[in-house]
Structures are given as C-alpha cells and as structure tokens.
Amino acid sequence: MADQEKTSAPVTRRDFLRQGSRVAALTGLGGFAGLLVSKLKSETLVWQIDPAKCLRCGRCATECVLKPSAVKCVHAFALCGYCELCTGYFVPEPNELNTAAENQLCPVSAIKRRWIEDPYYEYTIDETLCIGCGKCVEGCHRFGNGSLFLQVRHNLCLNCNECSIARACPGDAFRRVPVSQPYLLKTSYSHG
Image (cartoon, rainbow, N blue to C red):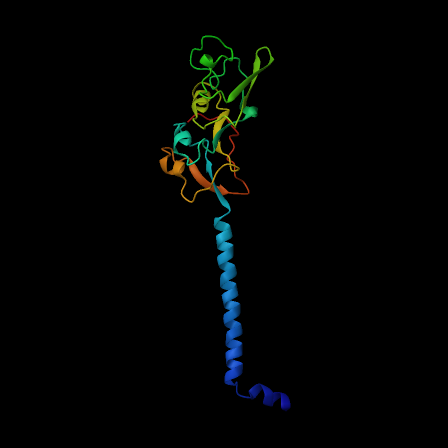
C-alpha cells in the first residue's frame, strides 16, 4: 500500500525541474556528440586527382597555393614497359637517347633514368624536384602506356576547403576521397 502512495504522489515543482534539467542535459550532450561526429566525418575527406579524368593541362603546377605544388607525378611500375625510348622522359624526337638536359621532357629533371639491361630502363620520380606540370604524364599517356600519372601528396597538401586547383581543373578530375583511401591509383592501361 505504501508503494502505491509513493507512485501516485503528485510531482513537486522541484522534482519536475530536476528531471527536466536531466533530460535537457542528456539531449544537449547527444546533440553535441552528433555535431562532433558530423564534423569528424567532414574532416575525413581529402582532395585527390582521378587519373581517368586528368587532362594533363599543367594547371596543377600553376594553380596550387603551394609553390611547388602538392601535386606530384607518380609512376605505376607495374604498367611501365621500361622502354629505351620513354615518351614521358624524352622530348619528341630527341637528339640522342641519353640523360642530357636537352633530351629530357621534364623542365626540372625530376625523372631519373637508370639502365637495367638491354633494352630496359627504369624511370623514377624525384618528388622533391617535381612541380606537377604533367608534361611527362602527357607524353607517357599520348605515346606510351600511361604508367605516369598525377596525384596529390597529402603530406604536402593543405587540404584547403575549396581547392584552387580543383576550381581551375578543366577535366573536373579533382574530388574528395576518404582519408582512409587517399590515393586513386592507376591500375590499368587506359587512353582517354
């Protein structure tokens, strides 16, 4: 009988305010937690170039807020033919197939050529020199197998809210990707 009296007793103003403030505090904490989760989700995206959409226009070198650009050439070795005449390394119709500056397509000599065995050569990118101009990528794409492509290096990128290169990109190749998978790698040969 005493239990019935306790449950049927009228709620005092103090009890009502105490319960109301608890509910309001829990609701506020839930809303704050939801806001934090949504903010964290928005911060988990980074800018990247889709190699299939890249037009190799050269704007990555000139439009990035960083000098030199955070965009660098990447070499997909699995796609490379290790050619003696690499159209990503040599200018069209070079004087000789050697490492002389006048024969190199890259304006800053960021591509290194190393003989492996006849007739194979290995080409590597010195990213500290690369300015992201895309000249080597265009040569490799146009006349070679397309093993060279451009990517944003996240250790350099400021991850601007509105990327200046993305705004200037005529191919609409820049997009936001999850930080857990920040690179869009070129895995197959494609002309386009």
